[in-house]
Image (cartoon, rainbow, N blue to C red; front, side, top):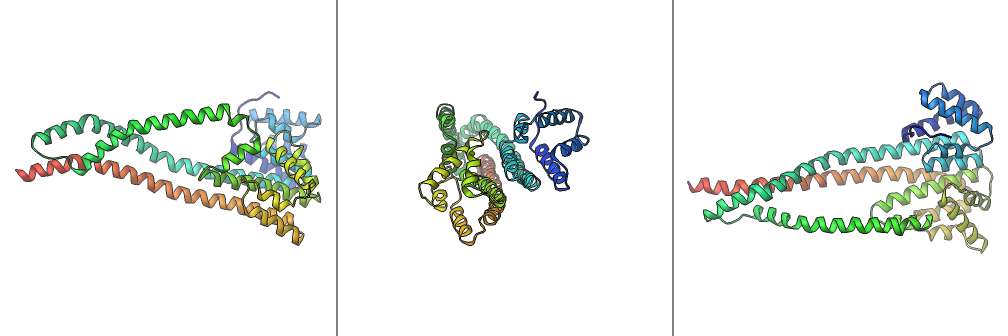
Length: 344
């Protein structure tokens, strides 16, 4: 299928939600796609017509979305929905998850954009003052036997540290790029997630999203009457998502050797620690599908709360750093001038 303009995350989420709503009202998938095409723009209508043709030829809906370059998490939701049969609910839940995640990322970008613009302007002023303006004033003040004040020393110290920091930052970026190109990309999907989940701060968010995805997919499969072993086989059959395949095979193999499910998931660092307790409790009360579904919702809610908390920490911190630099630059010049005025 010929690829045209890329679908945005919002377009993908709303598209899937509308299909879910139509399916909930009793529409077959093909008819839902056909009905939805009348609400789309011209270039999207053409793509949906191609989707209908591929669907009639026997292609799975998740493969069609993969050809359209849809988000891999969304494609994963569709893959499992086609197996457990709860298409309408899964589509709408996936749409909600994507929209919330995208909204949180937009908030974070919005919060960081203005402070980073201020940082850029502050750096320009700092370089101008530290290299051009402040040396001239320092020479003037020294000729008048005025010693450098605390703020002048602070500005010069920061100026001397900047080249060192830039050098360290450049070396870190080069090392990170080398690691990604020659090491990280060649690792298995599970190993990649293990490394990402170990990164401070970022790892917390990554674990929540991974746990949410695994919990809700397993929940849907179990609620459809599938056994845990059969559900894991479906994970292992997902060729489009390496992580699903690897985690399904790994857990299935360990279960076959006599390990308990809660003990297996506890060993994976890319899952939240509470997942093992949820699995154990669900197996004991016979409602593991409901327990996993509720826990997946908890993970998504926690992701939103931690994002909001991070925003509240980052913004004041950045503003405080900018404020200290600007005030120091002004006082480095103004304080000696006040001394001169008092002398007169």
